[in-house]
Length: 169
Image (tube, rainbow, N blue to C red; front, side, top):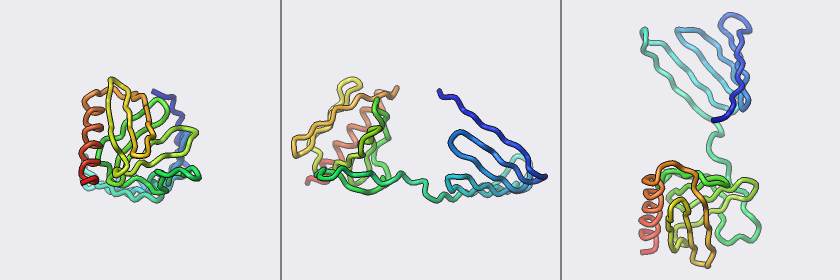
């Protein structure tokens, strides 16, 4: 659990500014309805329909993961954001691992993201908290998972194996 720093103050009646460690926001309105715009581009409109019942809609601009910065000459890297996930995202000691319908994305902090297309994935094995991904060109990625659910880790590997079999046939 991390330390959160958050300060909110009223500028004038009906206008509030919130300053946080990662983003800030400006809210205009009151209990009946309000509009919020945050520094990351998310816009939220909330309307109170009855006591205890409200409707909220949110639109986000630029909240999709940034395209990976592919290493020059990396054969299996593709510059594209994640699509709909086919397996639950898993955290590793160095970053995270996710799979969409095009392939597996390995994100490691301070390194470029690597996308392994499903057609190049030869095997995905889970041994305790170690996940090993092998590609058709002989590259092996060994990652240590930091998640707390062995069942979800196993579902991730099974979903990868199913998706890789479907693309190779």
